[in-house]
Image 1: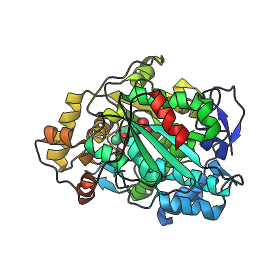
Image 2: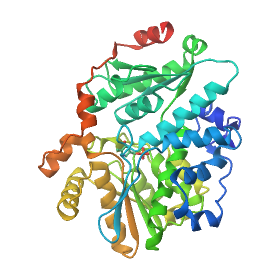
Image 3: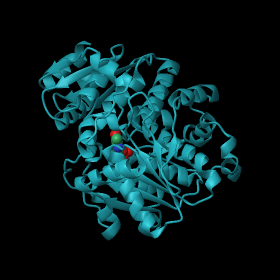
Image 4: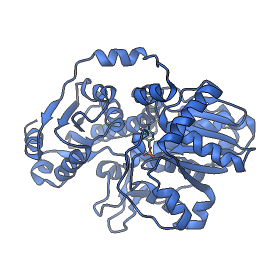
Length: 433
Ligand SMILES: *Cc1c(COP(=O)(O)O)cnc(C)c1O
C-alpha cells in the first residue's frame, strides 16, 4: 500500500516508510491511497471470527506485502491480547471498555501495534541500525509507548516529560521499566518537551548519529489499528440488529477517525458522535464550516485538551473534503467540566457504573444524540480506567476508589529518570548514549 501526504508536496511512500518517517517531509499527514471495503460475507459472519482474525482482515490491505502473513498475524496477536468488553448499561446504551491493556488506556492498542511493526522492520532490514523513538508526553502517550516498546529489539525509546506535571501513576509508568526505555525528566512544560523533540529531528549532529522516529498519534501504525475495536464492538452487537451509534471522547481525533475507517471498510453505523470538552473546534466547524484552531483550555478530561486536533484533516479526507457528506455521518457536542461531573454522578447512581471523565463526556454526547434517535444502540467508548483520574473521580462521586493491585505494585517501584535542564543537556545525552 502506498501513502500520500495530505500536503501533496512530498513523494508517495510505502507503509514501512510512512511508519518510520511518522510525518511526511512537507509536514503533511500520511493517508492510504485507497480504502477498499471488505466483502459483505466478512460482516455477515463476523460473529464466528476471532478478534485476531477480524483485525487481520481489517489491516491487511493497509500493509500489503510489506509484512508477511505469519509475522503480521503474530504482531496482531500480541497487540490485541487483552479484553475489549462491551458493557451493557441499559437496553440502548453500552460502553466499550478500552482500558484492559497494560497502561489502562486505549492508546495501548496503537502503541503496541506500532512498536511491533518497527521491531519487525528493524529485524528485517539488512543494514542493522537501531531506531530511536523520541516522544514527548503530557501523560498517557508516554506510558503506552513505553510499555508497548518494552523489550522490542532494535528499538530504543527516549521519553521526555515535564517535571512535576504528570500524575504519580503516569510518572511511574514512564520511569520504572528500564531495558530499552529511558525517561528524561525535563525542567519545563509539555510544550518545552515537544519543542526539544522537534529541534532534535532537525539537528543533523543527532540525526547523523541515530535514526530517529516519532511515536505520536499521527503515525499511521498508531492510527489504523484503532479500527479493530470498533469491529469487535460490532461483532458483539450484531445479534441486537439495531442501528449503531458510536460516541467517541475526542482530543486529537485519531480514535474516532479510525472508527470511521471501519465504516469505510463497510461496517454498518448510523452515526459517529465526537464528544469533546470545552475545546470545541470541531463542533464549531460542523456548525458553520469554519475550522478555527484555538489555544487549548485545561479541563478535567485533560487528554482531550487539544486546540487544533491533528487527525481531523484525515476525517475530512475520508469524506473527500465534502462538508455535507461528512456532516451526515459526524455530529459533535461540547461539554463543560460541571456537566461532565454531573454525568459521572448520573452513571454512578443510575447504572452503578464508575466512568472516568473522558468516558463521561462520551456518554453525554451519546445521550444527546439518542434524544433524536431513541431506537439506536448507542456505544460510548471508555478510553481510560477511572483509576488514572483518581482525584477527579473520587471528588465527583464522593467515594473512595479501590486501587487495583497492579497499580499498587507500580507505585512501590523506584523511579529512574535523567533530569534535563535545557536542549544542550538533552543533546549531550543523545550524542553520548
Ligand atoms: C488520548 C486520549 C483521548 C483522545 O483520543 P484522540 O484519539 O486524541 O481523540 C481520550 N481519552 C483518553 C483517556 C486519552 O488518553
